[in-house]
View 1 (cartoon, rainbow, N blue to C red):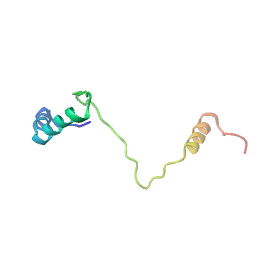
View 2 (cartoon, rainbow, N blue to C red):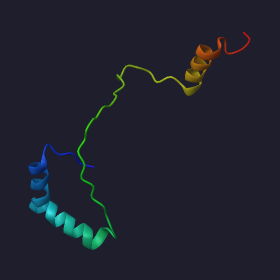
View 3 (cartoon, rainbow, N blue to C red):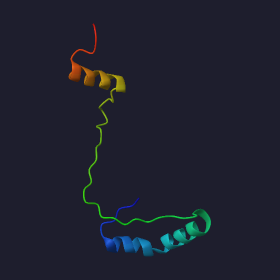
View 4 (cartoon, rainbow, N blue to C red):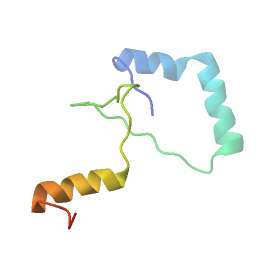
Amino acid sequence: MSYWRDEDSSAAWRDHAEHTLSRAYGREHRYASFSLHVAKVERAYGFTRPADVEIPSPYVLLGALLTRKWGSPGPT
């Protein structure tokens, strides 16, 4: 997947000499078929966990969800 600032940038990559050779090689020697989809990104968002934050085990998360929904998760 690749992203381009605008159509001109995409066309410049398409027409770049090394990319043209690479495409030709791939079509001849590597790929039986391929698909190209051009689309406009309407919205993009993501998430990055801070490096110093520990990832809890799934069991800890499940216990927290059960406690929140039904009260105590069981006898203590």
